[in-house]
Amino acid sequence: DGYGTAGGEEAAGGEEEAMESDQVAEEQMQREEKYRLEMEDRQKRLHDRLELGKKYAAARQQQEALMATNSELQKKLSAHLSAKGAEDAAVPGAEDHNAEQSAQEVENRYFHALRQASDLRAELSQVQLNYDHIALDMKTRLEQKQDKVRELRESYAKVRTDTVGGGAAGVRVVPTKLLRQFEEQESRKEAELEKVRLKNIHLRNQLRKLEGNLRRKEELSNELHLIDFEQLKIENQTLNEKIEERNEELLKLRKKTTTTVQVLTHLKEKLQFVQGENQLLKVELAELEAALSHHRDALTKAKHERDALRTDNLGLRGEAGLIGNNDLLRDFDRRKKEIASMQVTLEELKSRHLYLREDITELNARAMGVATMG
Image 1: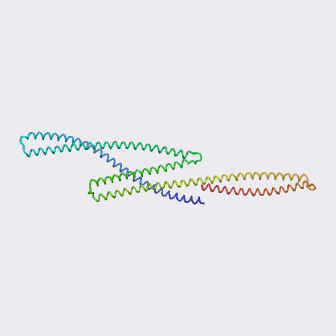
Image 2: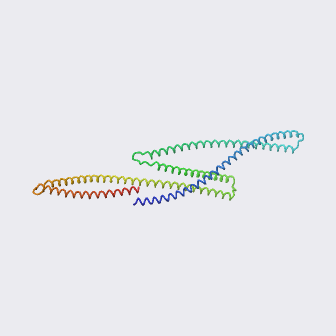
Image 3: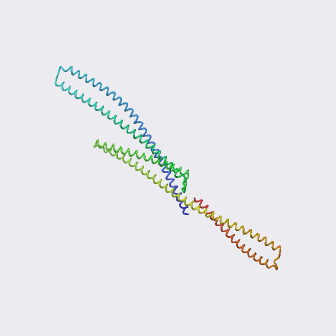
């Protein structure tokens, strides 16, 4: 009765878990659809960014070509102005001298600015090249780590399969179908957990980037408008809420996994107990069947002896009378007493046989009930 009540509670709990699982699955599908749309939007933005990068590189090349042309023209202009100044040297004056000094100073500042811009451009190219090398190195290390993780997961799965399904001495073998279901469920949970972790990392990086932008804006300008600050604050709060939601989802998945493991452990223990009890009942039933077979053999032997004695008695009665023969009378009395005693023994054996049959019927009913509960 206790197991029946427990089974009903487990069935009700299983239905509630199934409904909760369906609801979680529907929410997960919605989140995956939202995540897919975000990924498509992100890929689109990345593609647009690459296109803009290509256009920017082409524009930079065109700008460099134009600046080189401009530099040559400036040099020609400077030479022309120098030649013209040499021609006009015959009419010296204070204004002309000041103007020549001002033009020379502007020209020097202009070439200094060009040189500085060229140096900054070269430094920017070097920084971009360094960052490209760093990104390539990190990508290579990431691929190596992913390969190593994949190999470790495959090794762990193989060891777990060999350990659980190896059938070692004294260890119950887990069915292959059940093991495959657990592995598929674990794969789905790991995939969901990986998606949630990636989303969490992305949100944290985005939050860190926004916080860095906010700090840079605070360093560059102390006159940040209140509207921009409130907008960044709202965005930060939204991202924090998303991070909390992802953490809550991750906690729910962990709790659900723990509950599933506990229910599975309870079912395994119950199955082992029922199987042990069933084994004991089978042993007891075998002993009773052996005792019943022994009593049946004894009863059959007694019946044969009774029939033989009855046949002998009838033969003796036909061959000679009993009157005047004291030995026959005594023998008759003795056989009569033996027959009466054997009849009493026969009745007892019949009662014992009936009792054993009823006991066997009851044990069979109990065994069928235990099998039905298992």
